[in-house]
Amino acid sequence: MTRTLLPVLTMLGALVVLWYLAVAPMNIRVALDQAERAGADVVPEGSVARRDVSVWRLMAQNGEHIRAGYDLNRPRLPTPAQVGQELWKTTGEMAMKGRAWSKRSLIYHGWITLKSTLWGFLLGTTLGIIGAVAIVYSRVADMSLMPWAIISQTIPIVALAPMIIVLSSQIGVEERGLPKAIISAYLCYFPVLVGMVKGLRAPEVSQLDLLRTYDASGVQSFLKLRLPASVPYLFTSLKVGIAAALVGTIVGELPTGAISGLGARILIGDQFGTPLAIWSALFAAAILAGLLVTLLDLAQRIALRRMGATP
Image (cartoon, rainbow, N blue to C red; front, side, top):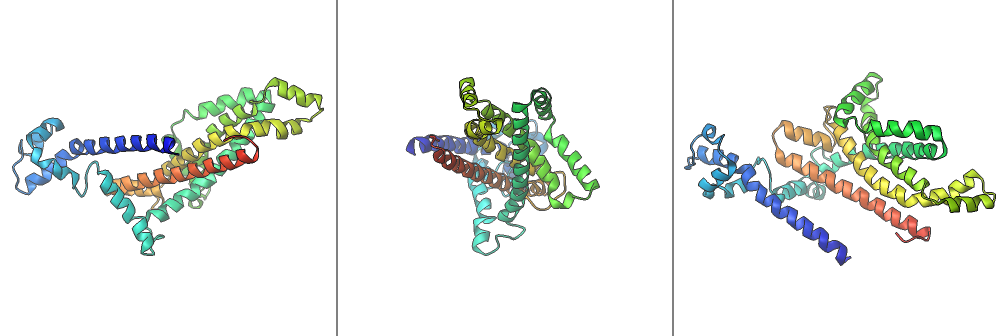
């Protein structure tokens, strides 16, 4: 446990330090503008004159104002502490007040995003497994389906998402969360497909020949050998797929003009110029993804242990 935790904490600590160091150059211009409006001496005077001056020179000439960049209400880059406070205010604090399902709570918006993510994950996983079985057992599917699956991933999701939204609106299903689920499934199915194909092809030729000597049918070979061999590969793909599904759902919320969901909170925060709302929603999405991957990891350990394998 310690061997695993120590590297994670070390990397996390390094990221926090780099984050704090980046706050000063990112916010120095805003801090100087506010200080100048408050009557303080700023070098050079005027935001226009400072526009072409590097942030490093501004920090060197106005060292007494660097600290102000860490306390801005609307910073270009908030500090980790500010993000943490905003995240707590819109999650834990609201839950303690009995307002967890308020439309200002990230718990509520996280649940909206989670529902579409799970539907998309289920759809993408199902299509991926079916496609993998077809590819392994059919040369025609192998030669046709796999190239198209690879080509499909070259289409930018930000370009595909509006098309799916528009088509869904034409058939009257835009209010049911289906468009977001489809976008989520689009990003999810490919890693599941590739991982499952690798897993189903993992058994060696000698193992398959041994089953043939026992006169095992194709279904028995699949259930007794190929499917168990694919389980580790499947769970690895599912971890990638659930994170991709969450990204797909958030991307699907952006072009819809939705007012609910983590993607909607990010978009609203951008429109109203509230960086803290954007960052708190981003961190909420990261925490949600971490929880989902952790649950899948736990399921993998349980499944492998019951199969008699070492996770």
